[in-house]
Image 1 (spheres, one colour):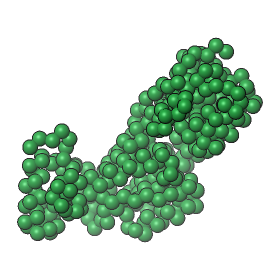
Image 2: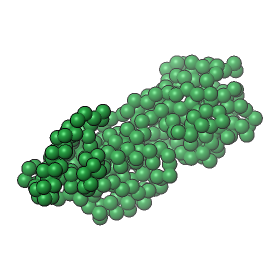
Image 3: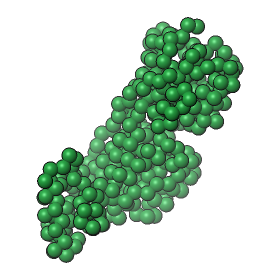
Image 4: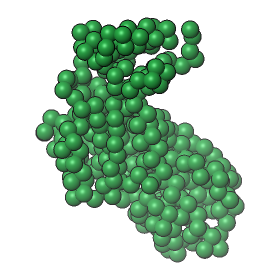
Length: 341
């Protein structure tokens, strides 16, 4: 029997009407342990079906410590954020395939709440934690390391800790190259708060590209704000009031870019005609806007899956490398013109 995609534990469990954890214990444990997971008839049935569908055990599962709860926790600033919810979908999907149960909790980017949620996760005896809200100082990650709790960072990085991110620095450069090649020289940046590597790295990549091309962007053209449309609108408004000659804005995420587009209209300018706007992440709504938004595409779902893979390796006593998934630029009407100013 041939399958276009490799068989998964979840698929086998569904086909046989069993819980995925039962199937996982039978197929991923030793012969003796597998026999303890269920009746001999069930064990035989699962193994026979696994052979029929050509199931290949995930090597990441080898060597996982015993007495586990098979639970992992994901901490994110706000699950209402489409970027973070997409990352969590990847986490949940990969965790299920690995025979794990994942749960998510909001920290609102507040260090005090973050610490409370870490303690909550540990009280549930999770096997590991995925930090989606880490700050560049890496304080919480360092504390988890000290307490020997398996953890991995996702979306944001911190020096010295295993992380799965987009290559945000390269993404910033891609946005800068696009605008520079379309003739833009007076450009503002709707930047995030400096404690988050996402905004910091994207901003740095953008600034470096312009500086390397002998067109440095002054600090007064960088407006820090949150990751939401309201903050993006306020930041863009400040930039356009102070420097009405701007021909382009780079926002370090799509939500702040959408807010910036609103501010542009309030200033009597037209996005995609006399002022370009570029965002980051390429959320689904970006292409549905009245003026579709040019955005740097990041593999948000893939980040979530890769974070689980890395965490499983760490739980197994391995030391995976950090990964920065490659971004691509998706050009749409919001910036696909050459400036004449």
